[in-house]
Image (cartoon, rainbow over all chains, first blue to last red; front, side, top):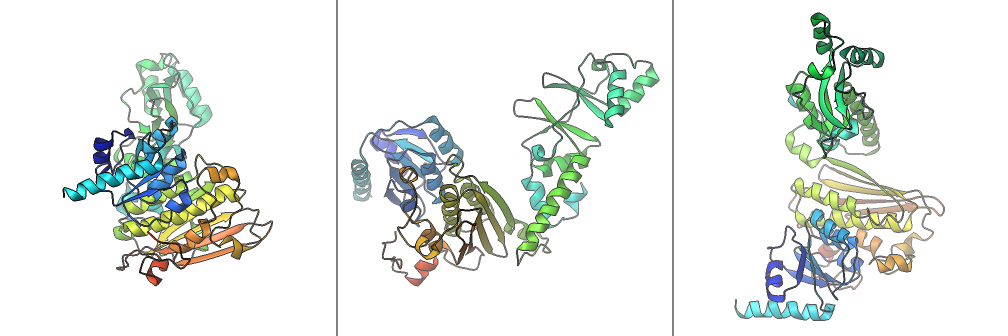
Amino acid sequence: MTTGMIVQRTGWEVLAKGNGYDRHIRRIVASDLMSDVLVVDEDDLLLLTSLVSDQVLRTAQVVGAVGVVVVNGKTLPSSMVAVANGLGVSLLTTRLAKYDACVALHQIMEAKQAHG
Amino acid sequence: MPLDEDRPSLVLQELIHRMKVRDVMTRAVCTAERQTPLRAVQHLMRDRGISGVPVAEHGRLFGIVSTPDIIRAWEGGIIDEPCQRHMSSRLMVLEEDMPLAFAIRYFGRYTYGRFPVLNREQMLVGILSQRDINRALLRELAHEVRRLETHSGVSAAAGDEENFHKYMLREFPVVRLDFENAGKAANQIRLLLLERNIALRLVRRVAVAVYELEMNLCVHSNGGVLSCLVTNGRAEIIACDSGPGISDIEWACRDGTSTATAWVRSLGFGAGMGLPNVKRVADEFSITSSTGGGTTVRVVVQVGNDGRSGATPAEEACPRHAVPDGRSAP
């Protein structure tokens, strides 16, 4: 599953297309606590959060995340898009709540596994 | 340029790649306008002790008048004519964002004594001479030598290309509560380590340590400096602040303890996991502090290509994905 594939299936809005847009996502991490994200030790993760802050993107880059999905349909400041572009991290938004967004991603992953 | 051909020291190579033209150039540029007579330009050169004057209006560069142009003007009896007709208008220029190494190559390739410097909007913002470069390099080298003397294990004698890519020294000031810039040091160091072909997992460990320490400086200290030295297969990170100090270091290093404000917590930090997380990714960790004084945290991560998996010390001790504090590891 790649970020591009997620966008294709869910229609979530893409605000910035990062370097890892077409990279295989190994793990989904959903958290509003960046301290929690920083203990994740796995490459190519996708971060789901309802936190609106440039630090979300900096945290994502530090842990090598392919992208960030901001949930709950929050309006993002333009600075966040600029930071995402600068860091090469994909930035998406969805109107879904965090739990529902996780469910949607799980369904995509299951469907992909079922169809190989 | 001799600097390139003679294989300068690692520190010098690092310096000329790190420094930008804007860090070195003279900003107060003495200029003339297109209608300025050559005689007035000559007086300007004499009074200021310079050998070339850019011709510019409202920041836009049109040409440059140098000593040979003045000599020709005297010989041809045209010293009172406007400089526009006799200036050199086919110019080689530098951009302020260029690395100093690029400018040094220019001086080696061309015989000009100076280059006008433009910004991204193509406006004249400075002028760069070899004297500017010498002065800046001497200043920076003195600074670097002092720093290197304080670090042990720096082998600046190895001058081969391979070692150049393994050597890195960066220093970042961190301002209290400056969340707009917090995290930039970690991001930059991460990219620089990736450029040096250090394994991704090791890069992440260094970046996490730097980021946590950077946030700590930003959130808890009065401000400080964060430095990262990579040499001899190890990355040494030092976070040093000017206060207010930690009264109980053992408590501060415990998971879940924090003095962060609600505002800091609203930004996703302050959960009391910073220092424990730094310890988790570090091969060596030490902290010294005194109440009312400063705090210094020193972290070492082995980044040498010695076949290590890049796993954290905690993971190596507990390979079945459980870290010692009982938190489930990813």
